[in-house]
Length: 381
Figure 1 (tube, rainbow, N blue to C red):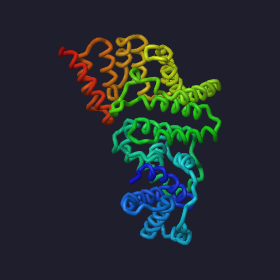
Figure 2: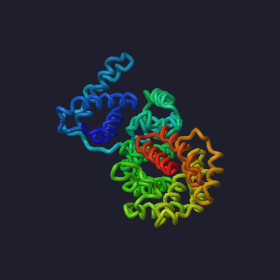
Figure 3: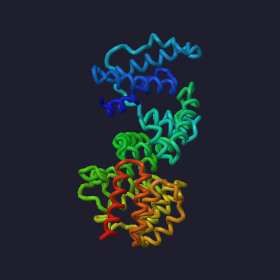
C-alpha cells in the first residue's frame, strides 16, 4: 500500500470537493472515508486512475452522509453533478487549501492545527508534540476548529503568517524523519515565494533549504542520529546551502526582520563553518537574542543556552539554562550535554538516561541511551 501516494493525492481530492460547493468539514470527512476504503481495496485491486477513484468514492461518501442527515437534504441536488468515471483533472490545490484553512473565523493556533491535520496529513499526536500540549488538548482544539468552519463558505482566505506557520511545522515533522513531508513543504514554500513578495516567506524558504541541505549527514548507515558537530560536512548539499544563503541575504537586505529570517541566519552560520570548531557561536548567540525578541517561543531560550555554552563555556550555558522551563521537551538532554562539557560525567550520564525516556522518537531515544552508556563505560575504566 503506497501511503505516500495517498498522502500526495489528498489535497487534490479535498480541493475538488470544496470547489464543488461542499463545506470543508464535510469534505474532509468524506476524503478520510475514501482513504480508509483505499487502504482496504487497493492492495488487491489497485485502480488505474487513483485520483479519479478517490474523488468518486469521496463524493459518494459525502452524498451518503448528506442523505442520512435530514438537515443536509438540500445537498442532494448535487447528485446529478457526480464526476463521470475516468481520469480526473490534475490540479494542485494544496497551497490554496492552506490559505482556506487559515480562515478568519479561526484563531491562528486553531487554523494551523486544522490545516496540519486535514491537509498536511499529520496525526493529532504529532501536532500536539509540535505545540508542546497534551494530545487530548490538541484533539479538542481540532474538533472545535472543525465545528467552527462547518457550513462556512471558504471565500475569505486567511493570512500569510498562519500559512507560514503551518508550512514550518509540516517541514519540521518531515525533517524529523517521522513523516516524509520536508520536500513537500519546500515545494509549497517555493510556490508561495513566487506568488507573494514577502520577506518572511523568503526567510522561511531559506531556512528550509539550509536545514534540508544537511539531511543526508544527519543519520549513520545504521539509522542512528549523528549530532551536528560530528556530521560529515562533505555530505552537505552545497547547492542548497548557496541558494538558501542567497535568498536569506536578499530578505535581510529589506530590513524587515522576522523570526524565520533570524532562524535562517543561525542555520547559515552553521552551514558556513568549515568545521564544528570554527562555528561562530558568538554571532549565533546574538541571533538567538534577536529571535527571543521576536518570539515568545520557549524553545528559543533552550537553544540559546546551548549556544551560550559553546560561546562562553558550559558553566555560562548552565546558568542560561536555569532560566528556562525544565518541563520543555529536550531540556534534560541539553542539561546532560552541558554537564558533560562542564566535566561532570556522572550527572551527565544520569540526565542522558532520563532524557532517553522522554525522547519523542526512537532515533533520539537510541542516541541518548548510547550517550549515557558511553559515559558510564568511561567512568568504570
